[in-house]
Length: 358
Image (cartoon, rainbow, N blue to C red; front, top):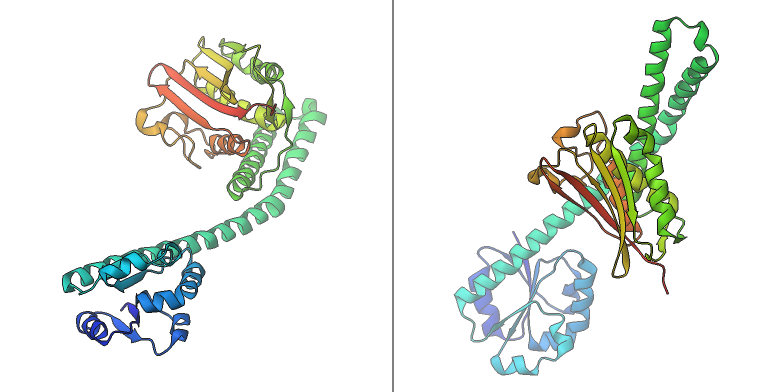
C-alpha cells in the first residue's frame, strides 16, 4: 500500500483527502516538519507548507534520485499566480481548490504509478550494477587464472612444432597444430572479453596523437593484402589527399580497420571487391569499408554492433564481440560508427574520427 504524507493546514482539505484516499492508501498527517525525513511515496502539501519548506522538499527529492518522489500541491487559483519559479522546482503536479474528487484520485494515481515505475527501474539498475560486478569478478579470474595456463599450452605447442617438427609423426604434428590454434583462439576470446568490458566501463586506455590520414589507410589495406589476394579479391584504397589530420590512437584505429576489413574479406566471395575510402565531412574524417559480399538482411542490420551477436552468415565459432569493440573504440574517440547493406549486393561499414584541432 502506498504511503502518502499530508502537509495541509486547512482542515476541510485534510478531511476530504482522508475520505477519498484512506481506503486505498496509507495516509500520514504530519505533526511537524520532521515528517519530511520519514518514508513516503507521495507528498501532498498546500501553499503555506511549500513556501516554508520548499528547500527541504527539494533536498529530499534530490536525495531520492534517480528514484522519482512526487509532490502534489493543493492550492487556490489565485495562489497559483503567487508561486515563484524556485517553488515550482519542488512541485510535480497541482490541484486547484475546491477539490474535485475524480481529479484528485486521477492525479494521485498517476503520480503513484510514476513513482512505482521509478522504483522498479531503480531496482533493475541495482541488479544490473550487481551483475556488472559479478561479470568483472569473473573476467578477473579469466584474465589471470585461465590466461596463464593457456599461454603455457600455446608456447609449449609452438615450441614442439618449431623445434621438433621434422621428428614428429604426421598425426602428432596435426594434433599439436590443432592445440596451438585452439589456444590462440581462446586467448583472443579472453582479450575480446576484457576489451568489451573496458569499453562498457569507460576505462578504455588510449594514446591520442595527430595522425595523417593517408598512412592510416595505406597501412590498414596492407594488413589484409595477403588475405584478400588468397581469395583473388581486389582490394583498393582511396583517400582525400586534402583530408586533415585526425586526433586518434593509431593502434586502436588500425584495430578497428582490422576488424572491418577482416569481416569484409571473410564474407566477400572469391573474385569480389573490397574498397577502403576516407573523406572529410564537416569536423570529422569519414572512413568506409565496402565489400561486394552477400550483404546483411534488414532485420539483422540493427543488431550487428550488439555484444555476442552474429549474423546467420557468420556462425563460425567467434564470440560476436569484434564490432562491439570497434564501435566502442570509435566512440571513445568522439566519433560514430554505422552500417549500410543491401542483401545480395554487399555492405558498407563507416566510422568518423575528429579532425585535428586548429
